[in-house]
Image (cartoon, rainbow, N blue to C red):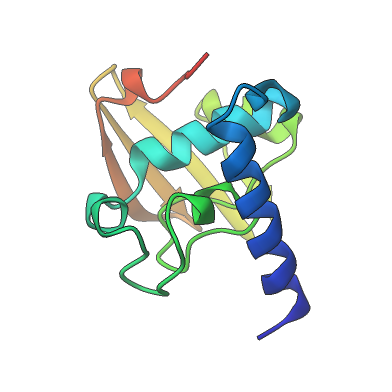
Length: 131
C-alpha cells in the first residue's frame, strides 16, 4: 500500500462525512459536482453492495477521494477549469490520460478514456448538478 492510497482514503472519508452533513458547503462546488457525477454514474452493483467489485474500496467514500476508480468508471477529480471543459464535452488531459464526455441529448452520454469508450451513462440530465 502506498502513502497516496492512505491519503486518498482519509480524504474520501472526510469528504463523505461532510457531503452527507449540514457542512456539505465546506467542499468546493466543483468538487461537490464531481462527487455527485461519480455517485450518479458509478456501477450500481458497487453502490448496492457498499464496496467496489474491482478493488473492494468502500463506496461511496471511494467516489469522494481524488483518485479514479480502477475500473475507469470516472476520471480523477479535476480543477474547476478542467471540470467546466469536461462538462462541455471537451477533451481534458488529467495525469497521463485524456478523458472526454460526449452527450447524446439529455438521456445518454459516453465516457471516453484515451479514445476508448469506457462507460455509458443513462439519464445524463439527472447527473449535472446536485445543487
